[in-house]
Image (tube, rainbow, N blue to C red; front, side, top):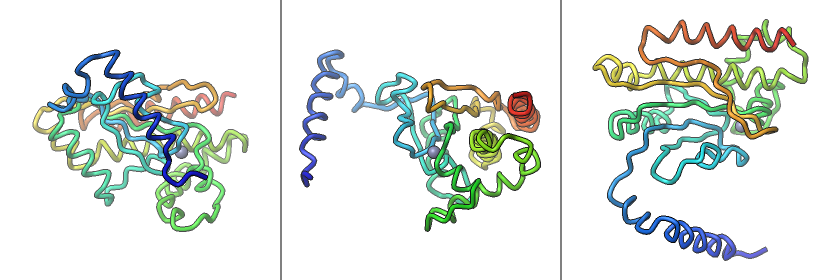
Length: 220
Ligand SMILES: [Zn+2]
């Protein structure tokens, strides 16, 4: 095992050189400002690289990731990211992105004991308990993916009901909140249609998205 991680430095030099060759002045332009239009709130899972899977360059996507893409109203880390994105960077879209077969969601679904992270995943367990009757109607092997999608809805709703987003909407700032899910098996994003652009949209968007999930999982 190398201790200096020289291979990563080598890759980094190649990437920086290639990027500069393809777009001369790329880094000096970035130095002046970052003006991303999107805030991505996703899972920390290494198989879900935010920028790459939507083809966005450095400077184009503001990113927050944690285990199971949770947005808790007491999490100063996530709330600070949202506040800076909305008030400082003036992003136009906040996208909560879950992914299929999420390990965090699986642990919450199956009551796995993994350690400290169990406390964090308590938020996802709350989602599970809220939707337990629906989850019980789904085949066991599809339950994880259903809970991944339900978790996106709940976390997107938490974004919508954060003081930062409510205040932005009250003062007329355009911010659209979205809930998406990424398929590990095919690399594709799906829009769960949890799309809200004003406080009065939230309940309707949530109900619409929830009925979409119910239709898909109960029909199959
Ligand atoms: Zn995950």
